[in-house]
Image (cartoon, rainbow, N blue to C red; front, side):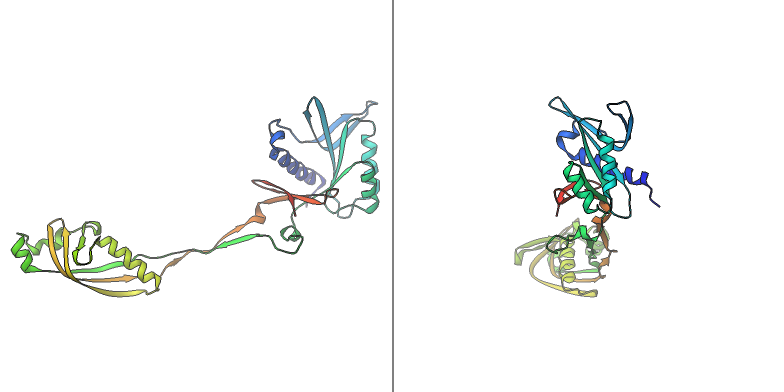
Length: 289
């Protein structure tokens, strides 16, 4: 259950955030105080819920806020009480803050005596709808998935044995034991003017098969007019290539929800100016609506 003290702390925190957001005020490190005691012209001590002051061009400006955490609208008697407290204290700017508004007489009394009326409250649904009924962005639901890479199960190059025998001294029986990495297996497709690694081919197959959502086990055969397989053993003439591979479906992550409403600390309505200020955890948005 909230108390009058809780509401005072809430109003204090929003006012401090507002002052901190103002460039010319933030340099002055203005502190918003609570339960401030001030002596009037007759030496009587008056206590105010919220108080702050600052100096500008040699003049000190003082502001007090009376906070009332009422379930109903504030009556004219409460405005009278505030005016009575400040009557014998010169140069005070009086402000009143409540959650649920003011009776008509209270509004008129405040206007006639230059008392600023605020509604300082938690957010509600109306804060997320513009004046013309257009809803503001309140939540973002991000859905993401990660495509799997093709996994090569079997790599079967068909080497021109006669060419190897006539042009190299390589023992083909050792070929499969010395090739280790996909990046080290290079296909120089002279006939098509292309040169790529087995890794590049794996990446291309991954893109192609993910684009058409063709999951499961597959086999591709490549026939070459003139191509060479380059390995750590040397350069071998390649007649064809058979690749067996499989592709698993994408991994779908749990949706991520960005809820801006959880970042909104509170809202201040300025009745005399007809606009709102929204105080978020990381920023202040003035004239909201």
